[in-house]
Image (tube, helix red, strand yellow):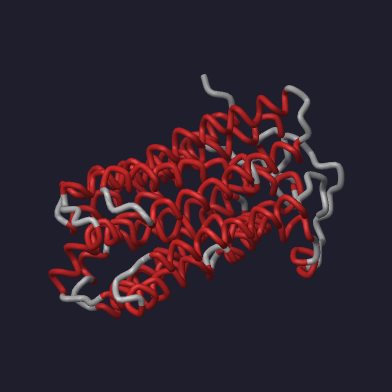
Length: 401
């Protein structure tokens, strides 16, 4: 019989599996869709980036609503919203404008999800299990991307959306059957109460502390590279390395690497804390690996023109990035335990800016460079290096909110 924390980790991880699978379908489907509907590179860029516009809009709403109405209700709403928008994509695909709007709605739903999960985890997961909780959460997201990358190339693009859209509705039924919320007079009860309980915090406080900004900037840096890989990897492999549709199955390999390293890194981080490493030193170590490593390997990736070697480089890039789940992503519940959902929402809002920019900016850089992708990857590597330096110098593990 699973303990309550283990059951909640499992349920939330499966929700993130569906979340991530739904998010990665379009970068795969857009190759046959663009051929069918005759979209140019800039039109593809807007379809891919429309998700991020909705995603960035609902982050803080998700964190605040979870605190006020409870994680159970808000996470249910999030999954229903993103599942409906996924199911309806084949009906909207003939109209680029309506398709972009549906992608915005998908982003709105998914934007509610992770802040709500961070809120739930900060209340029900004890400190000594926190790295593992976030490790499994991120790992299941990568597994979702892996499964989508393996399954979708064998389906018509319409059935890619039908299959994964239906999964969300099944999850909501299980979620309501298996999760019982424990609430006090104002908020969900903590399994590991924070030292200071400060429910009335001014909004300015969320952007007034360098330990929080170090998390925000590290998250932004991580996502810059990840969005480029998630949005453009199939297109890059197809146009630059002449990968065919069957080769697209290999885009699953980076996500397999990400999920495996996420779990291994999580257990390693919790083991270091059990061996009396300070929480701060563990968070800094894992974030350093998670930003500096991908920054270096994405530069290697840009110089490779051999398909297997390119897949290896991008796999290492995403694999090392998974260490961030035991680094700055776990840091929210230590720096702001009372408001982890809101601080993550702010962090993820800022970290979604790359998702908006990477579509049109990448298209413009590649077009202006006459088909060269090197500037895109150089910028991504530089952003990672800057994020690592700021996190190492400004992060903390003591409560500030």
